[in-house]
Length: 316
Image (cartoon, rainbow, N blue to C red; front, side):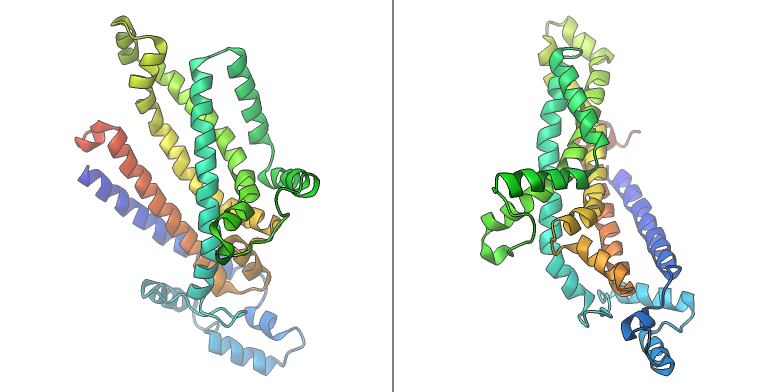
């Protein structure tokens, strides 16, 4: 198991390095001059050039990339051009909104999908199975921002159970904070729950067709007993993959949802950074998101080793 995890960690480290190169190069080709954006279109060219020199924008591309990487390895993410604040402080301020929102949505998605997938697989081709699959098809087809607008209309405008947007801050209390995140979390979770339900059902049905399940049935276990005791654990392996992938989808999806609900999270910070050409903020936040996805992927691999004993024994 140790060799397996070391191999995966090395692969993910290379992935992170490649991601930093891609992010840096993509943002370099984005049209617009950050110095000119900061100073205004009518700014003195000499002042704009002085600002470019101060920000290090005149240095060669490779030199700027290496300097950026060296600063990040030291934990220095630079200072925002727009907010005149260290990026680390901005990220920490926004992370207390985005991270709970992502975990909330991931928890809702998992709690909805796994029981629904098991129920559909246990009652294959029954009216319950057909109904669940029909609902999941709708969930996959409808974008999460459209779900978000429907939730605002229903629960904020009509029923007035929640606010339409904004975040009161955790100092207002845990309940108030979670209440403000409930509609955004549901909007993020529903499409992902639909995908995960279908994966859970398909994986469980595949496992139920394996020889070891038929052997268990031949020894006297009922279908439901064989499903719970033997098939379910093996069916969780592809489901863990999807859950790990959903973490990255939820983080990136938060960019849209946070703007719909006016939440002061990392997604809204990235959106504002792109609009204001604050490249140091955009690069740093996106790299942090990629790093979070890499860590979650490594945790999923560790979960593989727990679920699948063949990995603990060093076998493929």
